[in-house]
Image (cartoon, rainbow, N blue to C red; front, side, top):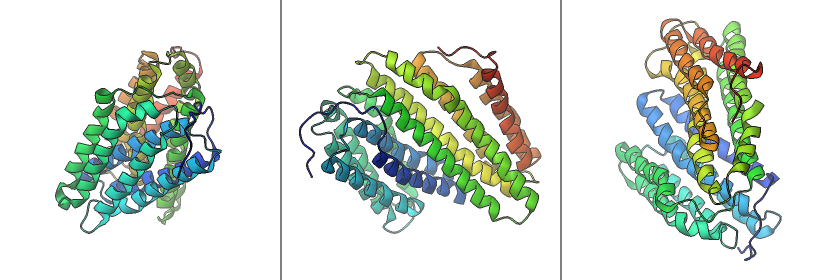
Length: 374
């Protein structure tokens, strides 16, 4: 497949094929969250974290790639569809990737394909110089993921963690230079990832609720979960998405790739991880609607929500250089209220206590008493 040597300008809007790609990506996120739902423990949380980091690194990579690709042409379309197929196979392998059998290798091989397509895709685009620096690190991390599939099952998560570490260090080692960031496309693409993951989390929570028999638990539990998810949506899309485009536009072109990595890479990973963990926490809260939760199950809802708020704060800090104390205070409020409610009262109280600080934060920011956005 060829896609020419003409260097297309950075895209300024998301194309329909990218939405198709995102639907496959969010299925991968759902599969990763199912690992935690099946084993809501510290070990399950660790597996979810490393799998999500590996997956998000290349989702972000494809956001950068499609920022540079001309998707009106057949070659780039077929290339992106090949990467989509790789992500789909990854998602199929995820639930059994850390167990015995061939699925760890399947996951690693599919990831290597995703990375290879990503690297080749930049040839002839505005990011061809940038991929020369970051591409070898991506291939190295993919080979580590493949090697993890060959390792004993009880060691696999540790090998995956090595790949995660390399990916976290890659921007520091190679420097995210040589890429052009089309602000409109970049902000819209990542915003769509948030809303799709939020929507999928509601679908999973609704499915979990309908498996129960008690009418009050099903209806009230699902509605409380919806309020919490809607509050997360509001906190990002009411102002943050628009402000992020404006703030990224202010960044000089030479510095823009590095700022984009910190904001839409590192910070976004914390947000997406928070949404995924909170969604599993909502399911656990509905299952234990009228009785206390125990162990890691009690942590998931407040910890996931705190991670979302911290990721949101880091996101804004990366773009503006300014912290938002109200959002950090809301994170502290979720931790202070949500965890005791889950451990001592039950799922209904945990959902309510977690939602209250978020709703208070929304009111604070909407009535103008909150600090102005930098």
